[in-house]
Image 1 (tube, rainbow, N blue to C red):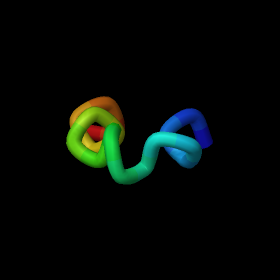
Image 2 (image 1 turned 135 degrees about the vertical axis):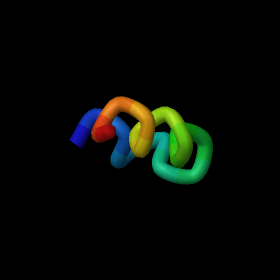
Image 3 (image 1 turned 180 degrees about the vertical axis):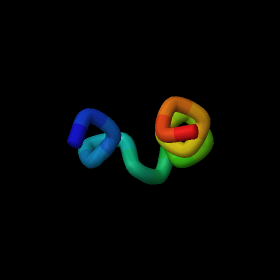
Image 4 (image 1 turned 120 degrees about the vertical axis):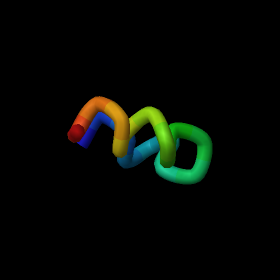
Length: 19
Protein backbone atom coordinates (compact mmCIF):
# COMPACT_ATOMS: atom_id res chain seq x y z
CA UNK A 1 0.00 0.00 0.00
CA UNK A 2 1.14 3.54 -0.64
CA UNK A 3 0.31 4.63 2.93
CA UNK A 4 1.89 1.57 4.55
CA UNK A 5 5.22 3.33 5.15
CA UNK A 6 3.53 6.48 6.55
CA UNK A 7 0.55 4.76 8.12
CA UNK A 8 0.79 6.82 11.30
CA UNK A 9 1.43 10.07 9.38
CA UNK A 10 -0.99 9.49 6.48
CA UNK A 11 -3.72 7.89 8.54
CA UNK A 12 -6.28 10.53 7.50
CA UNK A 13 -4.86 10.93 4.01
CA UNK A 14 -5.28 7.20 3.38
CA UNK A 15 -8.86 7.21 4.63
CA UNK A 16 -9.74 10.28 2.56
CA UNK A 17 -8.32 8.77 -0.62
CA UNK A 18 -10.08 5.45 0.10
CA UNK A 19 -13.38 7.30 0.46
